[in-house]
Length: 609
Figure 1 (cartoon, rainbow, N blue to C red):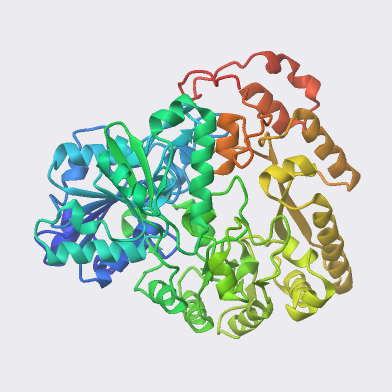
Figure 2: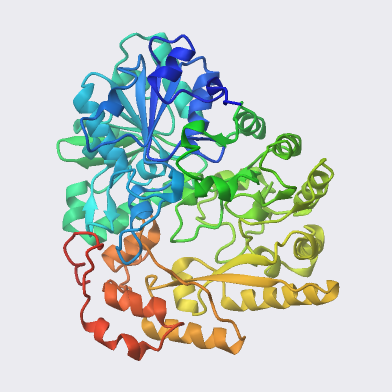
């Protein structure tokens, strides 16, 4: 039986006409294939706009190399084009840490590469501006969010200005965009020809304004960052710009941020208040089919969908504050959790999906065991400026009772058709191991660890100690390696107790700022001492707007201005990454030179720091 195409948002003119539409209000352009599932941002924003009464079409992975006919499918929308690169920054999606072109794309049918351009958000936006010069363009998604201000771009080894300056877009929504996109749409409904000034009070958006606006904001509480041109001239000023931005991002009532670029100024409004549980529940209860669009049936499976199709997202946000991670600057530091009732509704819906075989592969979030964590004293949180609630020590105000997760797992297992629940998104083991005996009892931490290992591990449990050497861990904002060893003992003891044979899979990063070859060799020795041979070690990739990428480019610690070693030579990065698997002597010829592959990204060599 053919699928009812009206269950999905239309992706072409024929499907638009099936609904009796002669035009649409919003066209959403995405670098990903269209999967109508709440784990895919374009689908979420599309359903939110649909709920607001908009006629929404999705243009997934349009061809940017031909006569651009894909971009003309729906004509000019009544309100705006919404543009995203997809679930990942397009350059991270395309290239490895050693700048080799990837041969696959998990967000494309058939796992095929080549269906999105480099710098996809800007490329799509410039095409739309060329074809529809009068249309409004609103950028969103992780690529736009993490490139909203001057940022280091690893693939060109250069500082790039705000994506607003390079894309020709009118507005940018950063972070999780449901709330601001509703407010933007409300203005289009009210005004036939809105002006930029109509949008300036909306939280969590950015735009390009006249350069004088930065001067005008001096009298307010706005943060005036070093200009893009100043950052180009001074790495120290760029590091300072990041420090100010990161500090602002964790404030309860953050300030406006301004940064001059050329003859314009990027103005970034404060983020919106965190959504309530009821608001987040409402998003997940929108009428998602939880399936890829039928258009892809003959093109093959979409690996990213296969990975998450049997998973349930139970919260947003992360207070870990890891230096190399974009989550807190995108989703926010404060945890927003769904209600148990909403999650169980989704479990019941999942249990009726044709692909479900009884195993929920994940019930988690950025870190699976932060569900319902919050500050015991909310007023103290409002004054807090800490980047992380658990580094360098666990905040005494942090309430992280694990009992709600235990109850949730038990309730979900009562759902008809659900046979097993495993946790695939990884946990913060330091929250368990650092706690005092009193807190372990109060927050049910040992009970959680016992139930997790006994019932919710699918043979392997992922954890992320990232390194063994303390000076490297300090730059990562990660806890001591000894805490991983403590949890490993706990994990093994629980396995012995119940007669289980399960593995603990730790993840490590090579060539992170502060890490030299001898540090990776020390890591290898320490893992050998516990008879562990890693299957894979992730080589550090400097992604836009992270503390680690700032250190990589500047060679400076943003908070102190101290110099820090950063391995920027690609051949030496490879040696660090491979020292587990082959002796360093096997790479001595590559240390002095790097032979380019035809698949390497075309670019100038990395500068010496």
